[in-house]
Image 1 (tube, rainbow, N blue to C red):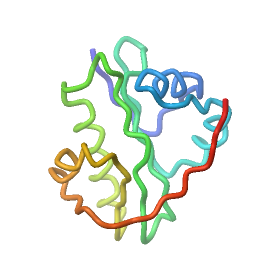
Image 2 (cartoon, rainbow, N blue to C red):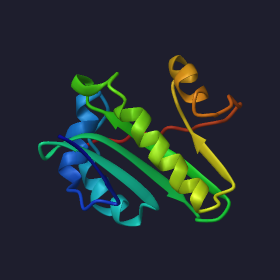
Image 3 (cartoon, rainbow, N blue to C red):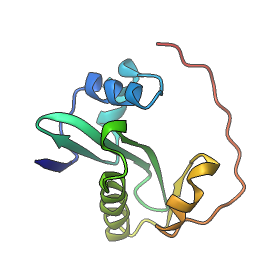
Image 4 (tube, rainbow, N blue to C red):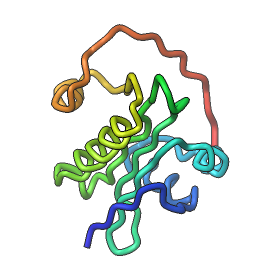
Amino acid sequence: MINYEINCEIEPKLISKLRKSVGWNGMELSYSKAIKASYFHVCCFLNNELIGFIDVVSNGITDAYIQDLIVHPNYQKQGIGTNLMNMTINKLKEDNIYMISVLFDQSLLSYYQKFGFNFILAGQLETRYEE
């Protein structure tokens, strides 16, 4: 049975494993600190296995940044990502956050547009992270 948990207690190694399943770097050491400072996150479990995760960084007033929407490849296209996004957007709206941002690959534009996101020009500087 699929279970969604808001602001769940989660071990960084489980997030790292999920990140690696979609081809991202694990960042396990970083998550041991970051999850404690997270504004809001949702974990999606199937039989105690983390299969989905979303995290939000925010100042709690004007801006929120949705990061790390991750769904394990074996469970994609089943509505899990959509559920995670809807839960997150609803929470941020309840908290009266003025603006919600998300970075995504151009190939995912139509996915994010269905939630009401507009495409804007932005800048990003990526530093090298090794783990």
